[in-house]
Image: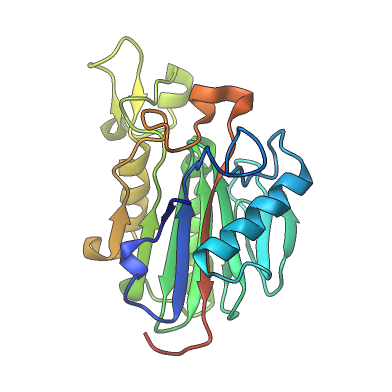
Amino acid sequence: MKIIYPEIFSEIKSVSSLFTLANRDYGKHEKGLDLGLNTNSSVDDFNFNLAQLSKQSGMDLSNIALARQVHENRVQTVQKSGIYDDIDGFVTSKSNLALAIQVGDCAAILVADTHKRVIGAFHAGWRGAVSGIVPNGIRMMMNLGAEPKNMRVYLSACISLESFEVGPEVANHFPDSFCDYESFEKPHVDMKAFLNYQLSEFDIPQSQIQISKDCTVLNDQYFSFRRERENAGRMLAVIMLNETFDT
């Protein structure tokens, strides 16, 4: 099983994190390691895949918070596991509670302030991005005591500028500096650059932000809704505070 372990957290004992790939030769059928709650895989498939991920990664995912994501900007502070409706982000200061975000072209953003022991996980498609899911999440982490100067961030693989063709009704939601109106027949949007800009507005040091270079549409190691439509599974991004207080 291929799993990405974000380097930005790799030397921090107090945080565990991961991001899955499609692993198309895994899982119970040809879809691979589908970890989405809103796909056409069954609940049994999801539970099987989650158990396999926990076993293969060594990360205890028995206490996990998941969301039925709706592409909006609501973030919730959570203290227990479960499936939460109508939200697109979590923050917590509770140890051994895994926060999980499902994506299949949208970006997953994992954030940790290990000094204050606060973490967040946010789902950013274009609607969530322009409506402020990331600023909302960072502010909620700050409400729990986190400080942007201490935050480390992982921004996952997602749709790239090259692949993110949109109509003017979508492009108009973004500042022109994040839209390419010249290189293609229709506007294209740079989601990673826009999300990084939102993070920089909080003065999070750029050296503490890891941005995946991969495009989910162009790289079939990832699921892509734009490429596969209803047959697409979902990757899972997970972050958890461990009991150890080493930073």
